[in-house]
Length: 414
Ligand SMILES: [Mg+2]
Image (cartoon, rainbow, N blue to C red; front, side, top):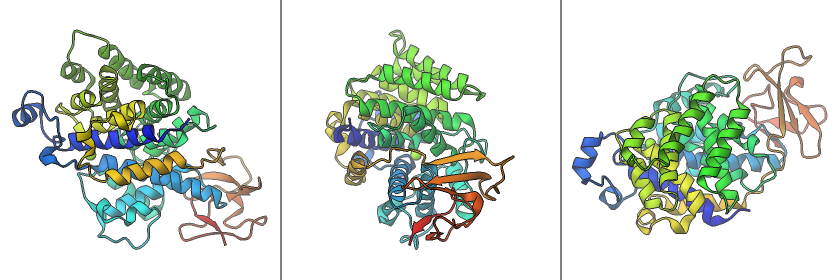
């Protein structure tokens, strides 16, 4: 079941952790404790919760999923990762061009507030610059680089929310989580944690009785089964297990445990630190976020991930007032949460079957190298191997992006 309290809790909780951590993102531990006292930072710096790229990109993930659902209903659909990539292209525009942008895919990119630059990650910028030029984006099959930075996982929570309470199996939404990160991050430790985060968030958001320990265990089991042949799956799962063990170890304090998990600049460490803090302080958002940001690593991302998890568990009302007051874009986050909660999610999550084109009698797409079959709402299959227009559906025409593959172009019904 979907409840708005959990959806708002997840997005606002993530933004709160991001904003708390953003002030100390580039400070080492000595500098943090010297500046803010023995507790570290506990309230927004200067009374203003400025969000960073983590929250901005999470919002664009949400917008991309909503765009996908909308395109599905209007008759042409190329799989959620494609629409998420388009939405990220809009984010890229907000970070590299002046307001207003000429052409945008999602309404978020028409808000002047989204144009603030808050230390955007280089991997995301570089991968999306490439997408902007070529319309080629990374997937877990065709990896775009070797980056395992946490820029992929930090923005993945909305995938879990979007599919929460739907008939789509959780393993499918895990894959979409992984693909959403692989758009910019090619190393498996860049996208495996996004599958896990999407799974954890989804379980907590769709089931009121779900606990963080059980959601984490369930995520680890499913993702290990989904990607048994990926070289770093075992490493990812082991780091998660270490976070679980440390959370239950009463002899070690928060910071000591975080030191054993890493710094959070890479995906597996960031998720492990966030999970540790969420487990250690399962009923206390305030304590969890303080723990998640007061360390010398990637504080805004570990804060954002932890806030997403606990927000999905505890809901919006459990977030302390001081984290909601003066949180930048608070109302926009709540509105996005409502749109995700109310979204009509098509029952067929992919509605696109992809298969490698070798040995088939159809031509592969020059851009994504996949032969694609799009299933239209009436059940007719539109095969990209036949080119950009289909004999069965001549009124479906590619718009302005590309012409050779249903995975790549935008199709509209005229
Ligand atoms: Mg950031």
